[in-house]
Image 1 (cartoon, helix red, strand yellow):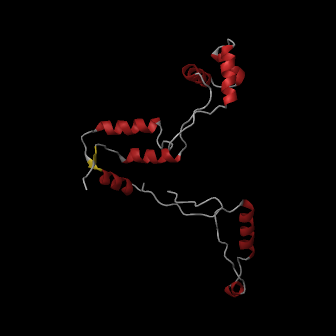
Image 2 (cartoon, rainbow, N blue to C red; image 1 turned 120 degrees about the vertical axis):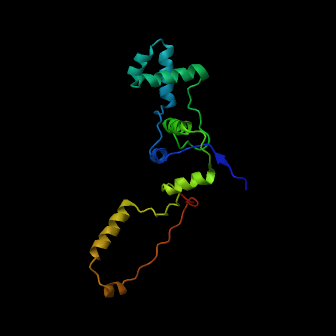
Image 3 (cartoon, rainbow, N blue to C red; image 1 turned 135 degrees about the vertical axis):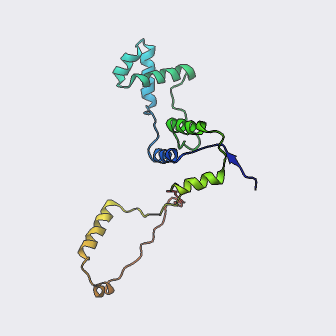
Length: 179
């Protein structure tokens, strides 16, 4: 198989930052309802300025400006549907990656070497353990049972019959989840 090369140099520091970034939520602005967007546009059509609109509808001025710019550009207020998988990295992460790559563009490493370095740093994917959903009430019952029976001897447990609770899904398979 032909070896593919990537002209990248990722440092441990950048990969670690990426790991923390992926776990944190993406930086996104607040989503305003279509009614709220329409209110902003109507107030603008009635002659109000951006600052007054922002104050009246209790919204940041930057949000009012964004709504008005999108309306002037597209002539619609509805939120466009999103397609595809959400991005894992945000703009800040992308800039960090680019900065590291631009430091030394002549380093050539194979894709497999890149993957090995990531694994060496402990950033390899694992299949998450499937854990059954246990409601708060059920947790409390289990804890109460455990506390009541914590001093039982093995003879006491021999007289006790435990039955298996088999889990099943009403809405399809849970599938694999990477952790």
